[in-house]
Length: 167
Image 1 (spheres, one colour):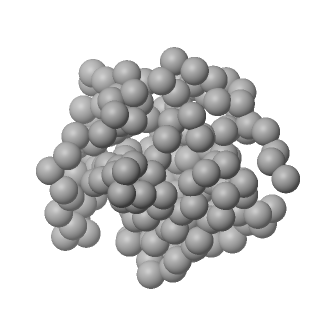
Image 2 (cartoon, helix red, strand yellow; image 1 turned 120 degrees about the vertical axis):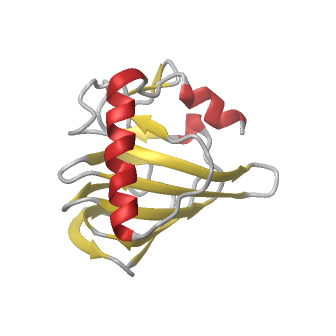
């Protein structure tokens, strides 16, 4: 998973990572969910404010040659995965547990456990936890250079991924 290796250098480490993972694991125990045995990626998108803008990702697969990716995405209450779009990646989100406020295609709406959302390429999207929430992402492969964020301060893998509206 070459792409995961690229982003691990931008991940949170140390006591903040440890605290976030401990809190996350406690939530998974309460929900009765067993996560896959992979290293969690704790991200703040280079902004230094993890509990406001960030998430925890569990990359299950990122099979570039085979053409698919699967990840679990977790946000704490009021934590946001920031607005972004992809020019190549088509995604489907499934809400496993909890509730999120989803922003997609210019609209904001609530998604609850059991809800699905397909995000086609070039559509701006973001989500914020309404309480803690766990999402499953099934998509085309994750390529770091295909992440384009609205916030120009976001830095992943040592690069700014500036948001551009693609028509």
